Figure (spheres, rainbow, N blue to C red):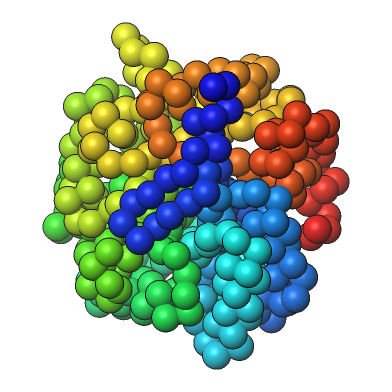
Length: 366
């Protein structure tokens, strides 16, 4: 038995049966003109399934709400043409022996006027803030909240009907759901504001609506993060107790798997413990956890020092495998290494050369 055996062992959760523990992390690629996944997108995901990825989580896909989108050429998850495009993706991935989930996304206050589909629609946020102390977007009413919750449920229902193997709800990185979590962006005094546990209410309603709109055993993955793209050093929880107060309402609402987004998988989350964020999440909730963060990279992110995030060389794959073998988490998400190597799992398993990731690789979809 080698350390790699755990990474390539099967994973089962209800109807979800994965050939291994490797997950393709969601990465926004902006190669869907007209917001419709085309044949290039189909081949992109199919190639990763052929390359040995156990579970593919798609790039962020916009739910059917007028303010959900914040970027050009990202795929939507509503409308006949976009859903037909996603059906081709699902069929191609399944045909290659893979499993796939869409990441359901609303960017919230990140949206700027002029963006598709209606440039007159501003960003939406829990308190009208685009950054802490900076009020520049639409403050969501309770009617707005109900509309967005319904849009998430509708998207999840469509995903199940199209044959996806589950859904991931994007609750990380300073987008809409995370804006409700974050005290710096959520100053509400109603039931959607308050302390960290109270600020989970919007996400809890989304999760409950997704569960109600799908089969009882349809897998729901929830992605969250401490860091925000508006502030890499932001933290929701500073202690295990605070993390528990945050996670348990989400877990009780119906999350099956937590996707714990960090910039570096090897960093410990709290002093006095060697566990990373995924390790703590699994320990607190008892639910399966996905770790992510610079897996398979051979150099630091180029933008980290610019944004005040301390440097540090990537940890070796051996470190990751030790953590997985210790059952600190259940699944491992790989991002940029899969951009450089569509067959990263097979290369790793067969001890073949793994190409280095480079920013220029984002300029085309292969």
